[in-house]
Length: 236
Image (cartoon, rainbow, N blue to C red; front, top):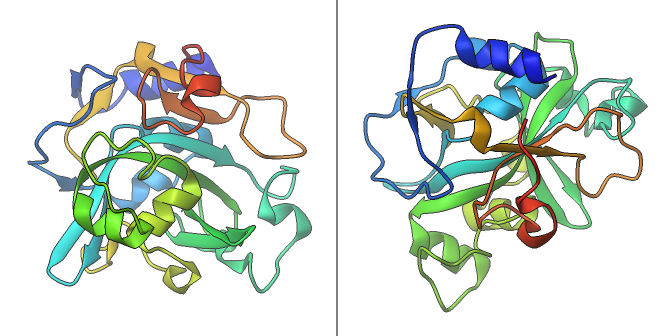
């Protein structure tokens, strides 16, 4: 796994790096991430989504931040995946094309997933947390919070809080995060998270997990969910 990630990081167009854990830089020079980025092994996509920018449109206003925590999910052989029970009315989106939005609910909370690999291969990445950067007041209002601020760690820490803050639900299933007309998009700043700043652990809240650790997060970033328990982790 480590070598697979290392190879992914070292190949392709050279990119600048930026230091973490603090990611609250001015958002500029954003470039839409193409579909092909998602058409790969979900653990590679999960690791490389760290540091990317998630944007949600609210009319002429925007809210969002920098992705700091993800989990990879495989197909029918993954006991924690919705695909493990086969195609259902709710899980059918897993079999869609790479870059498709799939939102499902657990205990009443919506969870945002991005489909990976080719169409018909039911894998994806769960977006667990972002560091909120812009549209803070919008997200706080959606969360029903009266006290706001860029240092409000609980605003988008955890997949349920994230979707509540960005008002994302199953009605958004089928959107493409690489489509400039989609209200939910993911951008690249041309920067990457340094390899020694990426932590890894088993996935959170699953009763049956795979042997491989498939949760990726920015080490030391306070917006990572369960920061005290998992946030310091260990490097890839």
